[in-house]
Image 1: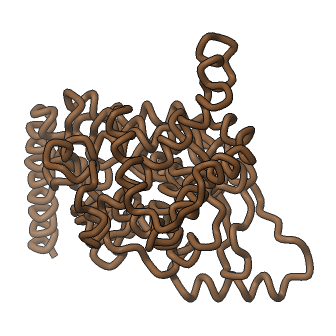
Image 2 (image 1 turned 180 degrees about the vertical axis):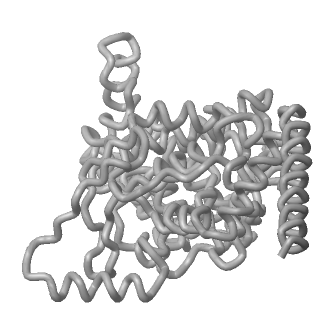
Length: 422
């Protein structure tokens, strides 16, 4: 891997448009040396590793990693000048790109995003930091819809800690707390007319095992009142199917993120993006959840998504329902292993949620379950399932129907007898 990193460094050196001495780059990196060391767990160890991470050795690691990340981003650029002779654009290394993406999203492998900015500025390439972010989107969000203008403009002003932080920005949902304009306007009216601070009473029937911390309004001016305690857990995929909820695969080009779940109240269709059940994806989710929990001012988009899927997938029957719809790709083992995928993730999260995007999904699905026609359909379907599991119930039902018919015949006979006497 070090050999590839050196090749990336030489490639970008050949593209640079300045004549500044290399020492100027070293001087700029030395100014953030202490901050950069805090990103490397190895840099704080009191072992032989610490000796290798001192002084110039550590700076060399920063430079190699920074050049490598920029080279990887440019490998996805639409400009042929950046792909031509790029060490990561060779056919022999195509298999490596997915592994690089996974490796860049591990918390132990993060370097300050500021390092990448410094190197990019020093190289003076025909690409600025704004363009680099857009290219990084193409690298990390392959197959998804193009980056939205809102997300792009936010990225320009946001101070990203590292690549994982940038990826979190890419996958977070940017449509607000509720896309219902009436609900939003009513929330604003309530806030405008209220003379006292907003008080949200606790609800004892809140999410199972959800620890709500720092649960405040994300954006009062947009009417996004964040009340985590009001979230009611939804049923599993089996229970929702019994409530006549239909499941549908949401293709990547239809959504902006793997978290982009959608529910249509009119048709009862729940659209879920493809879930690749792999060890790699599970590790990435774990790392992002840790990042959300231990970083201030970061919203828990991924943790909320994991909780949603935790409610949905309880056993292998739930897995089969989503797999038949093409929503799940199982690459981790048996169906039981797949069912434990989100259960394990949720247990590791400690139930930490400070912001619950798309809370309305829970509300809309619960409302659909309680709808009267659906309630009767659900009851009948549940009874049919019981009959299927226990054939004796069908025999009992037939006896009951036969006796009911006899009672009705007896009543009619009595009525006829009474009329004949009268």
